[in-house]
Amino acid sequence: MKKLSARRRHPLAALVVLIFALAATGGLYAAFAPAEKAQADETSQSLAIEEGKKLYTVGCSSCHGTGGQGTSDGPSLVGVGAANVDFQVMTGRMPAQQPGAQVPRKKVVYTQAESDQLGAYIASLGPGPSVPEEEQYDPAGADIANGGELFRTNCAQCHNFTGKGGALTNGKYAPGLEGVSNKHIYEAMLVGPQNMPSFPDGVMPPEDKRDIVAYVDEMNGKEATNPGGLSLGGFGPVSEGLFGWIFGLGALIVVAIWVAARTTKAKKS
Image (cartoon, rainbow, N blue to C red):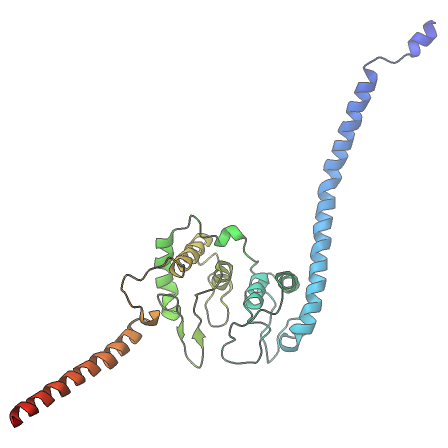
């Protein structure tokens, strides 16, 4: 009887074993779960790059080269970043229909998922600006007044102070900003497509870019008003001067003819 009682386990022994087992399981999960997640992310990124390379080979390599090195028909894409790809592809500018001084905005060919895959492949060729997160271009809470000042200082010379766009040299032009999404406006400032200068974060902080996005969004909003009355297309003093010259001078000519006719009639009578 004494030998049997000596071999009998303490009532709390099973509980202690269970606690140690749970602790060991938690430790193993903590040790291996992050590695598994990182491996899954790496696998997903590799698949995106692979699919993006296939899309690139079919739709882009004829102009930009098989490895993105560029040709006489298209610039190098090494180091342009995923943000540039997203802007060009999701505004329909790429693939381009034909070479020219300016690649216009047109109907989008690729889906957003395909654009992301293309961006992943181009980003793998060299470091560049990444696609901005939504909070970076969300106008909520931004300083619209500061955005307006920055826009008039850095953008109005080409895009007009109301964002209607304007002509440049040699057949180039600054496109209008009406109907352009906040994301693409932010990306355009970030990468500087075509004739536009780039404003990386070292030149213009993300907060300032978001303020400009908010200003353009407010300027083109449905509730936007023009305190000056008739906007004449919003093209500034050129259109207003032309209106004044044609209609103002025309009205003066009509009045002069009417006065001359009345004077002549009065003399005859």
